[in-house]
Image (cartoon, rainbow, N blue to C red; front, side, top):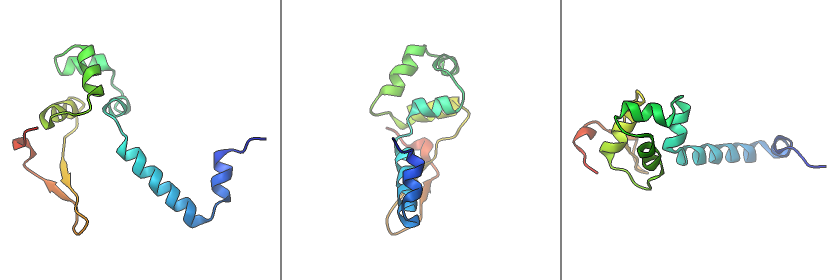
Length: 106
């Protein structure tokens, strides 16, 4: 009989479960795609395309690009009602929010 994932996790020591949960959280954050973000905001490609004055297939191509310019990403986020913030992370300091990201290109 197959075991449920939750059964397996619950059988692990607490510290091991915490490590697994922390790593899962990291992976989810790393792999949040533009498509997932759009869907989480309750928008279709067509709706977002209208906000950006482009066609639906353009949104599809944009969501599947391996690299985006900061300006393109900013426009995409703002069309969903958000604000793009750039953050620098160094091992020996707190997170640093780049406040003048509007001047950054690519």
